[in-house]
Length: 418
Image (spheres, rainbow, N blue to C red):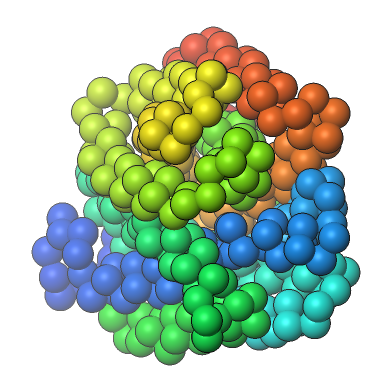
């Protein structure tokens, strides 16, 4: 499916409409269901690696800083290729780019079967390229299919599906590592197969997509090479910045919490991932829908506040129950903040540059993941786990102040400017 290459004018999203045989206000269309299925399988593979990679690298003799480097490799490649991936979404196919990303994500994991930390870093770096395609294509499809007046709810449901694998798959990974027939090789094989199945599901999406009507016929004269090297779409800069700040401390819970628990002597840690995953699953659709009613700025501010509370709480607990409470508070805040910033970005994305805009927005997660992993790994070695969590709480407090100062811009329909 090749898109028309019209780019000369920028119009609001309501200037275009789509031909569809279904109810235009219905979220659960066939295209949306297939999109969620493909995203679920791609994110399931990612969730399995959350506890597996830190444990694997430390078993190979790596320090927390080396763990941070391995995790950051994923972010570096994902950010670098994001403009090119966004260009392909606009000029070729959003569904095609998403499926290509799933295939690349799965194939890269076989490098982890080489028992060497450098091979794990290479695999995670290659996986970042596939991750860029999975998310840029998926977000573009979400913007194409979400009903205009239910974008907060649709974004919450979509991000809830993305977050739902975090309920059981990290715990499943820990069980699989310890099982008599399991081990890291089995885990990496499963994480490779899941995206392949996701690509098969995603291959059915194109036939169910709505057809755009009313696109302008003029063509953009911008050279293709300038398009590729344009990293930031200014209309989604503010939601991208907010998502970056919200996700900066996320590796502290997704990846490093299992190492902190072992330092505290907590060995049976699977329950933490289950409760945190359930919180994430329930919070995103419910709180995303709430943002349609109370406003984007209030929702994001509430998310940042909950994250600060969760980060402070984890510094004063020393048992599994306390860590679960801290993780649930943090993840509730991340759920409402992430789903709201996604709806915010969908509203501001130029329909004629949707692929590039959503590529810019989706760049925020791997960028925060990489910088956060390096920051967290360095902070653990320099100040210990408690010092690391306090530092992250302070950074989130700064983000909350920034959010309160820019509440009017968040609630405005005018594009954000650099």
